[in-house]
Length: 169
Image (cartoon, rainbow, N blue to C red; front, side, top):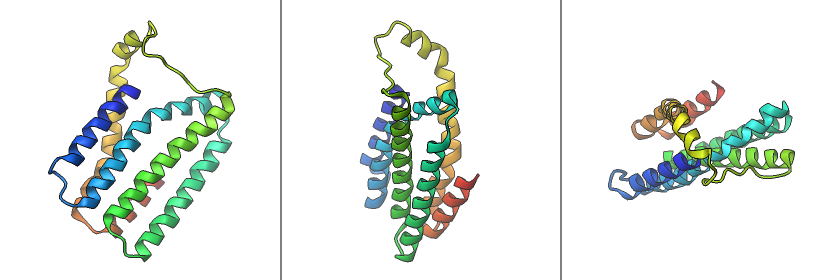
């Protein structure tokens, strides 16, 4: 997960630095998303909830995050903010969510998860599990690609509505 997150970080920074994005706000959002992509490897902490069958705190943080997201989107729409602000709210929500997942899991375990790269079983594990990583990336791309297309083609209101509806699914 960490290796894939680093590759995605570099790719997103490359796109943001290139001339592909015209608006400055789009570049800022993509840079923020790049660092959000790097934090995706911390989703591995969700295993703690599954193994311990302790979902209460995770669900509470998830619902609180959704409420905060709803309030932030409503405020952005009331202030007639552009699509870049709405997209930034989405990125911030994901970053806060993954950090809360990690924080609660570390409290439950009493320690951080560590996976050293020099461990003898890491490379055979990567060799055997690369397809699962590719499938996960494809799933995420399929899930969130609509938001990026809509961001370029429609109004900020359409982006906010689409993102809110997608989170309900």
